[in-house]
Amino acid sequence: MTKILTPDICVIGGGAAGLSVAAGAAAFGVPVVLIERGRMGGDCLNYGCVPSKALIAAAKHAEAIRKAAEFGIAAGEPVVDYERLQARIRSVVDGIAPHDSVERFTSLGVEVIEATARFVDERTVSAGDRLIRARRFVIATGSSPAIPPIQGLGEVSFLTNETLFELKRLPGHLAVIGAGAVGLEMAAAYRRLGTQVTVVDEAAALSRQDPELAAIVLDGLRAEGTVLHERTTIRSVERTENGVRLLCERDGGPFRLDASDLLIAAGRAPNHLALDLDAAGIRHDARGIRVGADLRTSNRRVYAIGDAAGGRFTHEAAHHARLVVQRILFRLPAGRRRDIVPRVIFTDPELAEVGLTEQQAREKYAAAETVRWAYSGNDRARTDGLGPGLVKVVVGRRGRIVGAGIAGAGAGEMIGFWSFAIANRLTLKHVSGFVPAYPTLGEIGKQAAISYYSPMARNRFVRLAIRMLRGFG
Ligand SMILES: Cc1cc2nc3c(=O)[nH]c(=O)nc-3n(C[C@H](O)[C@H](O)[C@H](O)COP(=O)(O)OP(=O)(O)OC[C@H]3O[C@@H](n4cnc5c(N)ncnc54)[C@H](O)[C@@H]3O)c2cc1C
Ligand SMILES: NC(=O)c1ccc[n+]([C@@H]2O[C@H](COP(=O)([O-])OP(=O)(O)OC[C@H]3O[C@@H](n4cnc5c(N)ncnc54)[C@H](O)[C@@H]3O)[C@@H](O)[C@H]2O)c1
Image (tube, rainbow, N blue to C red; front, side, top):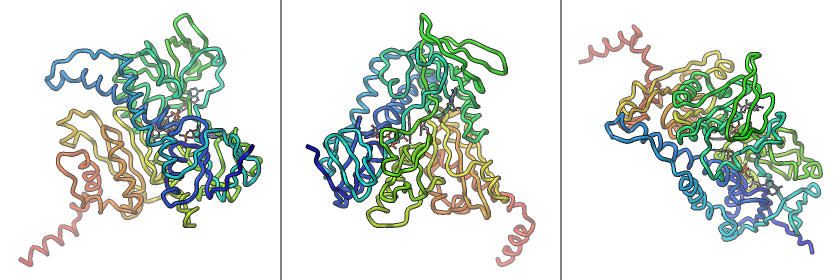
């Protein structure tokens, strides 16, 4: 018999976004029902951030062994035990899984339903043998790998982020479709593990990122042997005896690419088709569910957050979740802020950005300026042999920080500082006055900030003022 539940909040999707809402609301004693059709933890834990970063960590060790001789440590070519490497990735995921589990959420007071949810009408959701009539609904159904319409793709076997981490052997030659975040992170990691890697993109690689910073990352990947075919159309794909063949075209010239394995990393498609959104009057399109700045959908009882609402990152999902909890529980005004959400690609060198890029700032503010400082001017980058890197800080009027971008080691760790600066409307004056420890990469940001004020040291009025002040003894 169908059971009817009437919680305050019904969350659909137990990934980063949905779990954050459920845990946040339950902490205040609010009745919450959470519906998840697959694995608790969603993409980030099971098929995304966590396994990919564990793979990247393994690859980093392989590269460190290769580079050890530069530091006077004798070592040879690393030997990859792929089975153990995969076992470690699984154990990292398993180690985090209890935090996202049905058991933990049940202990927090959340009623978890393991089923597929769909709207029945404007205020009712069906899941398994339950009907849920909640005061508010939060859709957090995430996204899945988008499969491009390439001829022949249906006839070959290919990997996506959902299957890559189950691969039982190290690929001999991995072809990757898509030079975005997933494609380049995985390309770089497999290359370091000894796989031959070729990436094909119909556009420029990292086309959304600042070109000057992207060039540093792409040069680094090429230097390690990843082959990149940019602005290349894949006409068709076919199976071969040893794997797969891509028939490509660039500048009107056709070429063939033979590989043992194929990874599709061509963007994401939101998961909202199973929800029957029309039954609830919720507007949506191919890019996802349409929401306002307050993350509310066209149905006033329903919010959409995370990848389902155009988000791209786990921390962005958490940011959405916090706003929605504030809105539903305390009726506080909520407005998502894209300008403070860092965008990091964990290649090596890493690429991290927040706020406006140099070009976006120029289009927006007549007074936009960019200050930059290279890693080569930083002592820690030299002691640690960190290779090329660059910090760029974009400022508006009176030195107000409106964006920052970093290409180089530790970029992902350092970008949080600039997100904080933008969130708190700080200027370069604030940054030039803070004291980073020596020797750390954090000094690079301070140096960039000081360089903004260095023309002042040559200003004749400033020099005159110094001479006058000297007169006071
Ligand atoms: C390979 C890879 C690496 C990544 N690395 C990073 C990274 O390093 N840092 C970062 O910030 N981001 C990273 N991301 C992005 C990040 O994974 C996503 O932004 C994040 O997972 C979005 O969380 P979400 O809760 O919106 O969606 P999801 O994690 O996709 O969760 C949605 C959940 O909803 C469930 N669901 C869907 N439909 C229904 C339904 N009808 N009924 C019930 N349940 C349903 C799904 O089963 C799923 O569990 C990466 C992504 C990929 C693919
Ligand atoms: N470190 C992180 O935070 C991280 C890591 C991985 C993924 N993610 C997120 O996951 C999402 C998915 O990443 P992604 O790399 O799949 O998407 P993406 O949008 O970053 O890149 C997709 C790339 O595929 C290319 N492409 C699309 N169709 C193609 C075709 N037919 N032929 C050739 N190239 C084609 C596009 O031009 C683009 O460069 C993103 O939102 C990303 O932000 C984040």
